[in-house]
Amino acid sequence: MDGTLAKHNPASEIRPTRRIVRRAGVALTVWIMVAAGMVSATPAWSSFAEPVEYTVGFHDFSVVADAEEFAGEVILERSEILRALTVETDTAEDFESQANAHPNVRYVEVNAPREAAATPNDPLWPDQYGPRQIGAPQAWDVTSGDISAAVCVLDTGARKTHEDIPNAVRWRGWKDFINGRSAPYDDHGHGTHVTGIAVAKKNNNAGIAGLGHVGVYVGKVLPGNAFDSAQGITWCANRSEDLLVINMSYGGGFSTAEADAVDYAYDTKNRLLTGASGNGSCSFCVEYPAKLSEVIAVTCTTEAQTSCDFTSKGTTAELSAPGALVRSTYNRDDSDYVYGSGTSMSTPHVSGALAVAWTRFPGYSHTKMRGRAQNTSVDLGPSGRDVKFGYGRVDMKCVVHLGPYPPRNLDATPGSTVGEIDLSWTKPKHDCNWPIVDYRVQRATSESGPYSHVATLGSGARSWTDTGRTAGVTYWYRVRARNKFNFGAWSTTQCSKPFPSLDGVC
Image (cartoon, rainbow, N blue to C red; front, side):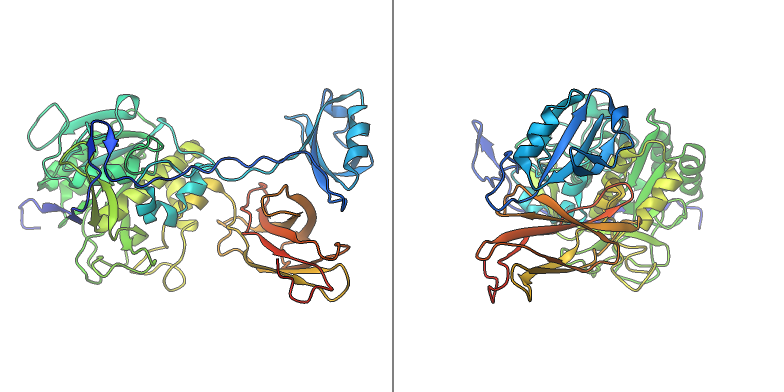
């Protein structure tokens, strides 16, 4: 270091594009998304005696706490807290009658399936490949976060009046280290773009969906220098929230002041810090502060999950995230949205994901949460940590959900004997760092369900044969890999007719 302060620049390129323009409350350019609703099942049974899964609640659960069966059916799962258990039966009417007659039973109901309901209604959601790529919708099925956590964005500022920038209770504070102005503003646009990626409003029928419904602080440190950055880092570190992620979508040369501030934030105040690796299109050239060991250095991935050609690479790269042509909020007016490319755009994907995950696991230390992000990331390059992707592309779904991915390549074909249907699949792409304990198979007579449990198979299972099916009837199947916490996502559905159908076409 030559004694001068290192110049810090936003690690991105912003490219304006067509905007949503509203006049008199009318959107002139609108993309419409219909939110998926929860799928409920009607308590019906088919003429083919399809198994039906029931939930039975009790007044006094101790009566059945250790039982293996209830009303003649094997108990599948139970919960003392809910005072309830589940069973599966082929004789639905008889079971309902017998169970309802039991004096200790509170209720008997079909165990209706639930489907994801997290697709946001924001009109530009179809343009946002980033949140979908990192599994945000599946994470939102568990939690979107809350204001117990916050992202502190150090950047060029933020246009607080923008329709998609959080205000009221989620806007936690502002500090201008460049001009000393008390009212939030952004005279560049970069900071508004970064802030939107991490925390833009979701399900407000406007613009985009940010990754986290968490608090947000904004500190203006750009265009500035390393000492401005150091002051901003210290300010963020001293905020009141226990769970806080500091987002630094900028970079430059080494600064002792900045390194000291990072050390204070990480080691003294237990903050997570994310930094853009840079856009040098070079190897072994990750910029500071991202290069510091306490900072999660973020590189860029494309929509095709390749390394962005402009990203700075190096051995300190820790995680990667979408950063090529990312659509987000901008500063020219209150309904302004543009595409931007750079590791600056990648970094808030990680910040937002980790802030949401921390609200799910508030007892995690910052180091444990950092390790969880590493261990659940999707390895895109050579096995293990590499200079392009670090440990891998951040996986919000796994960081939050604790469950394996869906089984892949599910196939259903007629078996070799009358009434048989053969199923096969390949294991999930990722188990989210928790081993699979078994596979669950469900069956239905229509694609929309209701689906009923038909088999529990070992962790090494890759196939199963269903027997006793009725000729000419189409059956639908789905498979779930389950871990010890009973987490796991269902596969896509597949259908077939049983043998003697030759092609199983449905």
